[in-house]
Image (cartoon, rainbow, N blue to C red; front, side):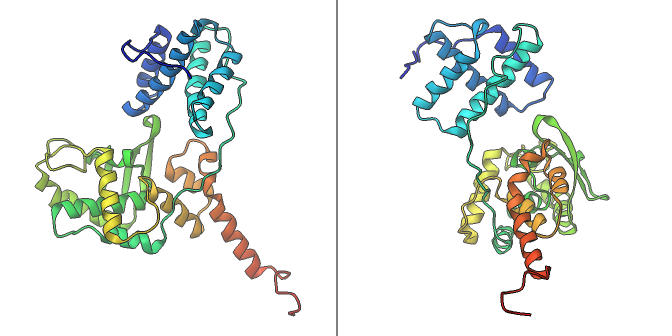
Length: 309
């Protein structure tokens, strides 16, 4: 196994610096996304240094050996795919900038990923979770409003904490949401969520002594972090007695699943979730398949039990 001299600074390269700058300026990626790309590419640079190799001479064989190296360190398919995705984006940029004649990662296939179904709450669990905060207090009302929006609009937690006062059109009942890559979308919210959000902004938000324009604030009047919201979700789920394994995206997954169960089509759910590619939404197709099967069994003339006319 390769050892790393932790006393030495991590290797750098001007190509990498230019690429990360491109992700910030042109792609508008969030700080935590930039950090993840930087970490994965730096890991590859360390591997190259340990083998006296250089970025300028990387081939598809080099990348294959690197993936095998990561595999020997215990990384599973999902982590390998993330590393390869970071390198594929970097080398595509290097080829576009004419630093390399072509990307050495272009023809390398992704490791096979298990098709994991998201953790989805039942409608009853969602109701218990939403009712958990004490809405008689500003903190509780804030938390209830956050939970309502996560479920009403299928927001990512990062999208929720990024909402500002100017992103809410109370008259139209629309949220302006900035998703991955700073992509903007308009998302409708239902009447109950609008009622909670409007009441929170008008009568509860001032109790936090706002110092920033973010809708949801901490006790210091500043915007909440993703970690703070996740802690709140876990605490309220525990208080509500929700037994289903919960994640920061549980309400987002439940939003999509419950829409499909109610008859929404996959393209609509894709737009509401802000997925650039419908393949990201297709993880929910098990819901549609089950609903279509139930309809088929209930209404097709040949679906009656054997022996019955």
